[in-house]
Length: 231
Image (cartoon, rainbow, N blue to C red; front, side):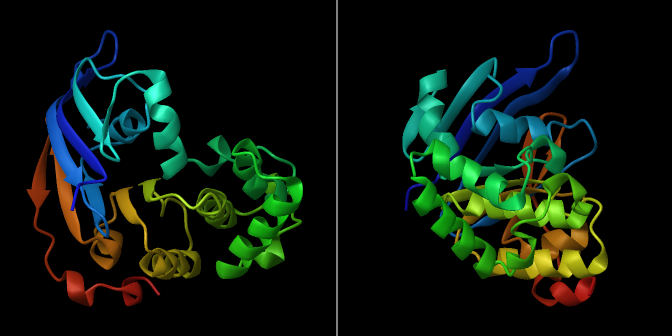
């Protein structure tokens, strides 16, 4: 089965700084939940942004959904099919209410307001977030915002989820709930996380990003590390 993402020889450096990616390579296949770990500043978030065309590498290739992506128009389809959940929910939530935030992407995809409202209700119900529907977004807790960003992405039915440090600032109850939600989803995922318990709970394999390169990481005891690690 063809990979959803196939990345070869990525090189990227920010102006005036050292190169953060140096011949980075990996592939993501359907059904995989691929975790990426590495020290601060290693380039993990940079890698996710390159995958959806928010940053342009100096060298290398990004093949997404069977097609090489180079120019901005190439990534329009990628952004529709790969749902990106940012590290800081406040970078992603900007509408007055939860329902409006979840509907925003749907309306941009051309759904009518009635269609979008139906999908919003179905998504919030599936994630058990209906009680947040009419809440003012900026008054939510950090954990609630995190779950709403996930709902907003899932409403668009992506083929892949890109999650950047999704457990940051979560209390134990929300942490356990997020783990259960992710395990129930059919989408392939790339998950950047410093949390070894979380990676063992959800990941099917892990990669370590060091000195600009990605290498397979053996994280033992995966089968026994489930929600109970933090619940």
